Length: 424
Image (cartoon, rainbow, N blue to C red; front, top):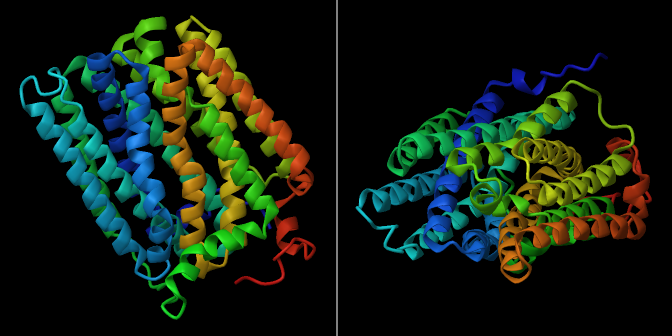
């Protein structure tokens, strides 16, 4: 049968879900650009940028396993809608802060960190519910195609959001930018509300709460290929967090202002979008393991080169290539996770994946800010890229099943894989 690159997009509810993810991501990316620029202009301290990530990561990690339990025991659409409503409230709060004359310029940044903290809780519940909901809407054989399109739309939003945020802030004001952010969140809520699903999670009330919360961890522990892919992404994102320091590069090294910051933040996503479209239009990877390792290594190399660049256009190119490399690893890891996880465990496994990957972005931002404070901005980014390359080498040596992985379908049929014979 010929490969249909648009198979998942033919499902109306899946398109609506993608629309809500796209719109929400544009809104949150606008918010990130404005918040990071405002805070850095007040503090002039790279560590303050790292604290933005930490303020979101702490609540995210703290409730992630419980959020996965909730996603597998209650309607996933309802959970995602409630999380969106909280995110809308956070956008409105930031707008209200900005409407108070001189509020941020007087150094009142802790209320902003508090809003980010609350958004971290909402995002922790949204992510596993959304991943599991997406798997409900398409047939299992369409998962790779659905993952590719979802990643593509998310990254397209991550291109548009930062660029739009930088332009709105640079040419109008923070008030206008936050107003657009809030309006887009309303649109995202309406689109998510139009999703139709008849699947209901299998109740897990018969399990003790501790056993339910840890079932996702136990499942992954018996799947070294998935665990290896997740660990690889965890440490590469943790150490390769140059994006968190982009306000420093834009302001002090490349000297481009908030407009340039928006473009720089959009560059990795632009590369990722291009790669997503290529992946969606081609058959599944035939050497998935080696491709994953190579893509993460390329990400590390681009990180080092970006740190050394003082040319705005070269920096854009390097960020775009790093985004394309990162997208390959995202698609392979996400396809492994959704294909090998039983439907009744998707929420809890997605929650563990969120702790590995989602929180690593924020914790990586904190690590980058702290390292920049100690070593300086450029040396800290070089260090992060070098550590990413070391992680790739260690993963290739310690997880031979991942290194030798060809097609993802081979893992599904490989009865020698620990735990592959039956799902908990």
